[in-house]
Amino acid sequence: DQQVKQNSPSLSVQEGRISILNCDYTNSMFDYFLWYKKYPAEGPTFLISISSIKDKNEDGRFTVFLNKSAKHLSLHIVPSQPGDSAVYFCAAIITGTASKLTFGTGTRLQVTL
Amino acid sequence: EAQVTQNPRYLITVTGKKLTVTCSQNMNHEYMSWYRQDPGLGLRQIYYSMNVEVTDKGDVPEGYKVSRKEKRNFPLILESPSPNQTSLYFCASRRAGGTYEQYFGPGTRLTVT
Image 1 (cartoon, each protein chain N blue to C red):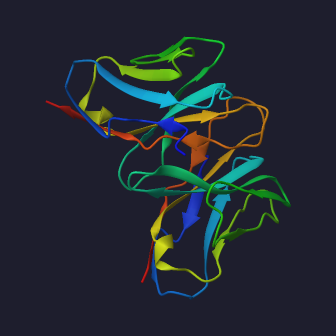
Image 2 (cartoon, rainbow over the protein chains, first blue to last red; image 1 turned 45 degrees about the vertical axis):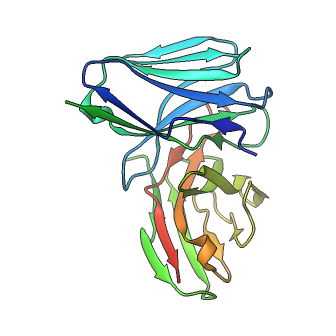
Image 3 (cartoon, each protein chain N blue to C red; image 1 turned 135 degrees about the vertical axis):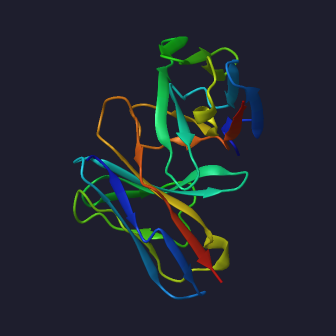
């Protein structure tokens, strides 16, 4: 039972344009969400997070939006750069419980010149 | 430099030959976890530890053992590896409380023939 889903396995975007990566979850108990970026042959690195008490969090070119009623979050990258080409994982956690991050299956983003 | 290290990075072994993948962090983090990454399945948690001598099962613990005798180390043990344990393994750590951001090691690619 995949509680966190990323339905787009891949996405291609032109440099300078906006990249939008989507993530859906089924467990309404999740109250904290994170995005990780992963390059080949490296471990995932933290990108940005959002608490369920917010609907938006911004850090430079990266913005995460949370729609609790739809159980949906999205990551916006503006403007996209070639160095953003990587696999992006969303993850969710129920805070106050054991340290269990539940990850999505990942979306491979390719930013073309 | 704050980091999570794993060894070995690559390992090819045969069915039934016991092996240990080591994980060490230098950030004095309380929480440590092991994940495996498989195509189409994302990252799935194998085991986690909330502190020394405190461990618990994640989503896919069958065939694995862990121990947490020291705060900085969290080895993953495969007593009798099987081909279905061929995967990419990541160790992660985070501090108790705070932002739930986990720091990942570089990964260990294991092949069991």
